[in-house]
Length: 130
Image (cartoon, rainbow, N blue to C red; front, side, top):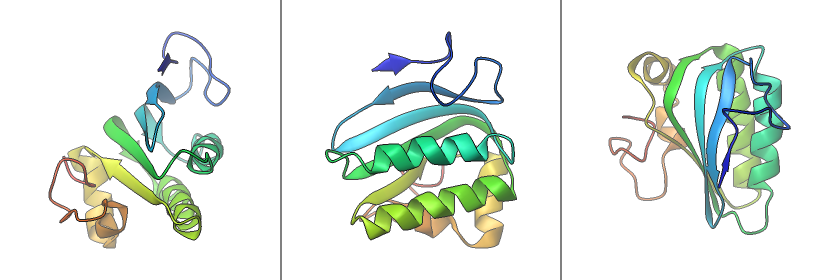
C-alpha cells in the first residue's frame, strides 16, 4: 500500500486537483481517489487506470470515489475508456462510493449500471452509488 497524498506520484503532482490517496494491489486492485476528475486530470488518470487494469494479477479494478467531489464530461469519457479496456481484457472496472453530485451525472446519463461489479444491483456500496 502506498500513500501519495504527501508526496508527488508518477501520475499526480502534490498540488493537482486529483490525488491518488491510497492503493491496494491484488485480484481486486483498489485505488482511493480524492479531488476532481476533469479535463485537466483526466489524461493522467487514464494512464494510471489503464496501467493498473493491465496488471496480470488484477481481475477487478475498483476505484473508491468517496472523496471525489466533481466529475465532468472529460472524466466520464476517461472512465468509459478504462471500462472498455477492462472489458476487452476480460476484467471488471467498478466505481465505489460516488458522492451525490458526481453520482447524479452518472444517473442522468444512464451510465451508472455500467460501473457496477458482477452480481451488483447498482444500489450497493460497492457500486456506483454511496
